Length: 181
Ligand code: PRP
Ligand code: MN
Ligand code: MG
Image: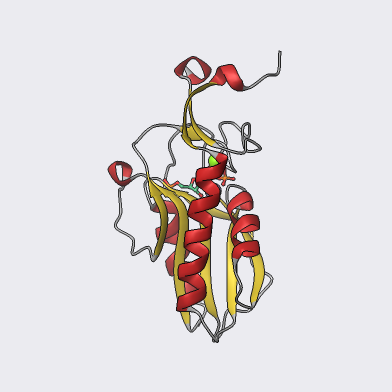
C-alpha cells in the first residue's frame, strides 16, 4: 500500500547519474575555491541530500549551515512569497558563501535568498543547484554551478517533495499525473 514505485512516471536522474553529477560539481568547486575556506549554506528541506553528498565529495575546508525558507502554499508551483522559517547561525561578514539548492524552478526563492544573503556583507555569494528548469524561469539568476537542466515537469526524489513525500528516493523522477490530479 505504501510502495512508491507506482507513483513515479519515469526516472530523470538515476542514483548513479546523481553521483556522477555531484562528483563533477565538487571538482569544479574545489578548483574555484582552492586555498579558501568555504561556507556552504543548504536550503532546507530540499537541499538535504545534495548538501550531504556534495559536502562529502569536496576536498576543500568547508563549514555547513542551514536556512529554512518556504514559499507559501503546498501546491506544485511556488508563489514567490518567501519567508524565513530558520535563519543561519553564522555571521556572513567576509565569508565566501555557496548556497546549495536541489532545484531552481521559477528562480524566485533563490533570487530572494541571494539578495538577502548579499546584504549581510559576505566576501562572495555563489549558487550551486543540482537541477534547473530553464523553461520555468520567471527571473534570471546568475548560477555558477548547475548539475543538470531538466524539462518543465513535476519532479520528486533526492530531497524534492510533493506534499512532503518522496524526499527519500535515491533518484529523481517525474511524478505520475494520477498522484496530483
Ligand atoms: C522548492 C525547492 C527550491 C524551490 C525552487 O522548495 O527545494 O527551494 O522550491 O522553486 P522556485 O525556483 O520556483 O522558487 P520548497 O519551497 O518546496 O521547500 P522545500 O525545500 O522544503 O521542499
Ligand atoms: Mn527548497
Ligand atoms: Mg517543496
